[in-house]
Length: 145
Image (tube, rainbow, N blue to C red; front, top):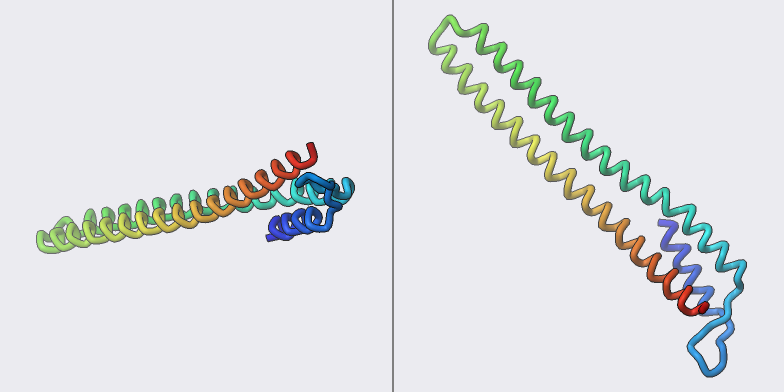
């Protein structure tokens, strides 16, 4: 991720900065620091867009799974209606319907859990990046004061 590269550039800028005698402060090139911070500001929205896309994709997958489950249910109901005339076929259709519904619900739950876990992992990464970036900016501002 480019954010990490920019953060490394910030660290390098601090490492090569002129040390202020008798303090832990460092003088850095203001223009270089501003350039890096601006790049970070420009890159963060991309990271956030990616997290938003993951969230939306998760919702889309869940919706698709629900639609598929509904479609399977309707198909099973239609089969049952067409087989009502024969008692054994009706029993068989009911059993198949229950299996289909159970399978559809199971698949829907698995997809939902998987997408939630994936989205949570991506959002956790973004959150960590934001925390690190904010800490670096906070530390830099603290040192600049």
